[in-house]
Length: 225
Image 1 (tube, rainbow, N blue to C red):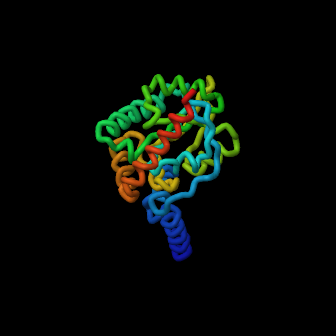
Image 2 (image 1 turned 90 degrees about the vertical axis):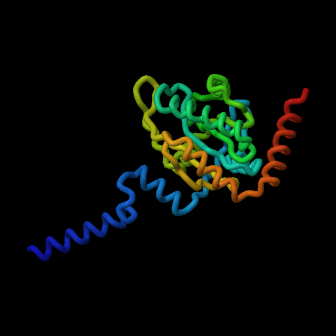
Image 3 (image 1 turned 45 degrees about the horizontal axis):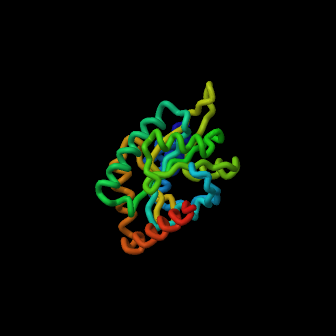
């Protein structure tokens, strides 16, 4: 009996060890962060609809100008954690502009709420005092693509009363190639910025500057009467 009990305990111990990545991952949230830290993740195909009304493929949006992107997930009616992250993104925007690093790193807020159409996203962007060249807002109109993207980032969204949602939150670092390379706690914006700047160092600054300039010129040309 005692020997059998020892065998069961040993088997359970081994399963727990492997299932928690050597006891490092004790929660699902920790596990997803460790998984991304160990291996960058390819993101699924999806079409984004920006606050301007423009639609663009996710890969195209993430790789357009060679910048690293800090991504968070929101919905505009949120009065809890989204508001906290909005304030932190405002500070990140100021830090990027003051340091001149907006040519290396940008911010992207993705809404998972299908009610957030371009008009709602644009109003939220104005409320957040977002500068379009640094911080953009977009939704994912197609439901299956939206869910696939949430799954890839490890975001869980649960419907709550009064049309609200419960969801986990974090800063997601996407490199210039469009790969998810890191996840940082939502209450550690400086750590997220440091992570993004380290990721940006792998891309030549001159190439990035040229791509940003080309992107800006294309945007201006598209708005000329």
